[in-house]
Image (cartoon, rainbow, N blue to C red; front, side, top):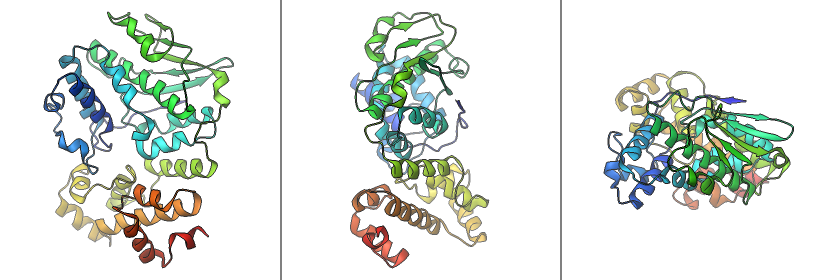
Length: 341
């Protein structure tokens, strides 16, 4: 199974990966402004829920890290900070899978929601499960950057599986298609397994016995709901045509974080005035689409999950539960309890 990557410069991701890397570099005394040089992203923007960033911007921060950091453990430390809880709906979907086999399948299927720096594939054999990174040494211009990206990617995989499994679940082995770097001795420390260099390709190998294990947060209804939501994030939005469809998909790409009209217009390469005019031509408005996205998700969450009303309000980006209850009354004439019944 293979996951392809979306366009390099499309701003569609919350900046959680950039924030983690900037944080690790700051711990080394490197100012955020230096880490973010060349990205058009400010340090303050990393805390702004409406900001969206691109794969290209994250790659720029990685390049900065390669030139600024003297600590070879930097990419491993970043990978260790990137827990699935930072990945929004994609992370929740993975954590609620009913088996680790489902987790691996969905990890590939929805990988494009996760600011992907490399493509990933997984293959199941009778005795092992293998992650492969087929384009790891095609997309980056320098050896140092390619190694930085793969070191972080491997550590993310180890961190994510630990999150899902609810405890240590180390790989059997890690293989790298490049010669052993000077800091090769720290690889096993962060990956928790033997590491081999000068191999045919980049692979992370697990014992197939883990595939039937049940994740700690496995839940049938939640898994189904979140996977359906992720399907929409990939592009099967409720509204699939016209400018309104594009806006709907952008809003659905970060549920719980609803970017403002200016941010959405910028990601669509137009002014807010142009966006407003084109939505009016389709008999809708930006606020109406935001309202519809929230209403649709609210009904799904309340009817098909056991999430508390407070949690639903938070996922939908409401400042407090009272505001959510008022909106629900306006949408449906009913309260949360009535809709669950």
